[in-house]
Image (cartoon, rainbow, N blue to C red; front, side, top):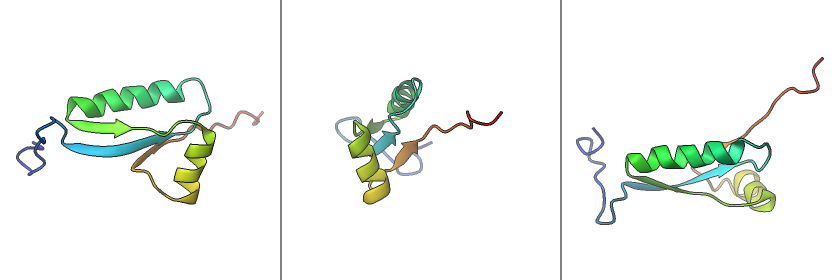
Length: 79
């Protein structure tokens, strides 16, 4: 369907390159990011990520330089 819509793969097999950033908090957030990258790769999208808290905060909150973001939040203090 993506080919039919005009989003064809390039010579390198990549259809779209994007940035997937994630909050470096929580044990399952990096695992979720890895899964999303694999799922996107299956349809020809190449996702890269910045690493570490300073990069995440700079890109997401300072420069708004990201395409996708995974952020984990919970209400653990609520009785």
